Each structure stands twice: as C-alpha cells, then as structure tokens.
Length: 85
Image 1 (cartoon, one colour):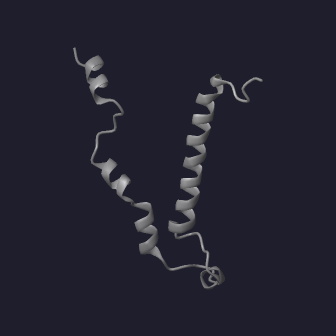
Image 2 (cartoon, rainbow, N blue to C red):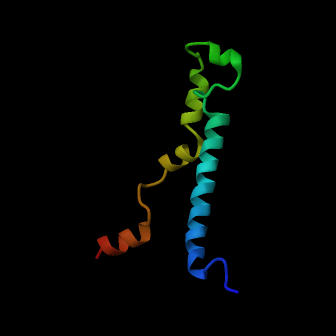
C-alpha cells in the first residue's frame, strides 16, 4: 500500500497553507476593523457614514507609522556592500 501523499508535495502544501492563512487574516481584519464595512442594520441604512476619525485610524495603523521612520531598503547591509567600494 502506497502513501496517499508524496513528500514532494509538502512545500506546496506549506505555501498554500501560508497564503490561505494570510487571506483569512486580511478578510477578518476588513470585516471587523474596516470602517467601510457595515455589519449592523442601522449603519447599512445610512447612505454616508460620518466616521472620518475611524477611517483615519484604520488607514494609519501602527505598522505604517513604524515603516515611515525606516529607510526604504529591504536588505541595507547587502545594498551598502555592493554600492560602497
């Protein structure tokens, strides 16, 4: 009796699991935190919501604030090694 899954498939399953978990994270984040998503009936009945502060808080999250203080380099040590001689 052979295996039902070959070991060569493990990296693909790992990558697909990671991508699926990232999609679930993003969808959950949007449903619960995005001010444009309206779950309750009273918010859905309004044509325009006046929630500018909530929208600003959603758009300017902590990771974005942190990355503004960092230089726009992915690997600064390698960049400096190859650019400075």
